Length: 496
Ligand SMILES: Nc1ncnc2c1ncn2[C@@H]1O[C@H](COP(=O)(O)OP(=O)(O)OP(=O)(O)O)[C@@H](O)[C@H]1O
Ligand SMILES: [Mg+2]
Image 1: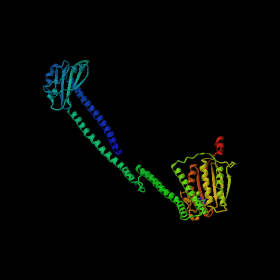
Image 2: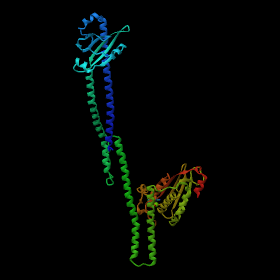
Image 3: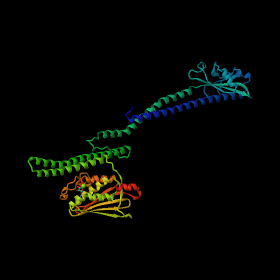
Image 4: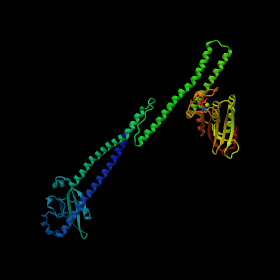
């Protein structure tokens, strides 16, 4: 198996080109040879006709003039080196050109029969006859019958050396035999050069790409100025390396953040238990210590839960159980589940419906996963409560527009600074710690990033508007299912 496309291309190119060129040259030679042979015969035949005319004009066929004429070579209007012989029908020589000397051109019985049926016959003479007349080449002979009023009178024979023709063809053969392989060789060299030029950049890409490993992820392929295939390939690969590098960084960051996040509560836990072990304590002290330990362990459990969720989201293992779901009910559910926490901080939560469509009831259906959407709403309410001051009010507003439901959670809390705002959806991101509200639990900074993922998995969007000190508004938009699209059973189902 050949390992390089370059070699394959060159080989293929040479084979195709060589084959085509050979066929072409062969055909050319064949046609040329046939044409030349036909011309040669035509000339012989014309010469024979010429002789016929000559003889007829002179009336040389009268028996008595023959002996006189036999001495004169027939050279008028004939090509160079023509051997001419005129025979009677019975095969007796009547006239012969002088260059024939004492050689008699042969007439076989076959030729005679053919000639008598009004055919001119071409033949190439055998060696023995040829060698007596010429030293080099072959003799080609035409036997041409002359008929007078349908009666055969005599045969004209003209012979000529085919040497020039043969030599010409030989030259052509030699030329083709040398030129064709040379051309193929040149083509192969040219092909090699072109393939090298075409594949060099690819080789370079391969070498660079090989050297880009986990350690040198910042390396990139060179991109040329011309927007050709190679440049596009390099750009595509570079873009891929960018994404890989980014993913690598995120991965490292995530591991670091996660470890750090877990380390804090573990350190606290360890410290508390060590202190407790130092001295004998009263049972009340132990209860206190255990209570605070439970608190830390709960935090750790929460973080681990969130990390697990993220891991599932990332690996695509998280399967959403989508079905028609009433968002208004989910919102109310989330409000009631967080109300204890809210009242603990003397915070009111108001739920309002502002329907813009002609729809009268607050029923709004979306195609969604109940539990996941509920956890999103709880998360957002938890944030709103956590980052609000006591005695404030949180508004949960539900607006139904033509194709989507807008759900706003509006608080009058500490707000998010413009510098923090773009990052709040990042994992582990928490706005400046010093600003967090007295008496609230420190979060892990994962809630919003998980929420965004879940909302987007429902083809929705989540945005945050906020002003430091004035409050924060989180807006979720979800595409709604129109009630007409629901079957009775789905309706019943969604209420279950
Ligand atoms: N309603 C809000 N008001 C003010 N700041 C907010 C609000 N919601 C989020 N933030 C800021 O955005 C950060 C990220 O929020 P996120 O919900 O992701 O994390 P968290 O609440 O700190 O922790 P977790 O939700 O994972 O327990 C928060 O730490 C906080 O600084
Ligand atoms: Mg949160």
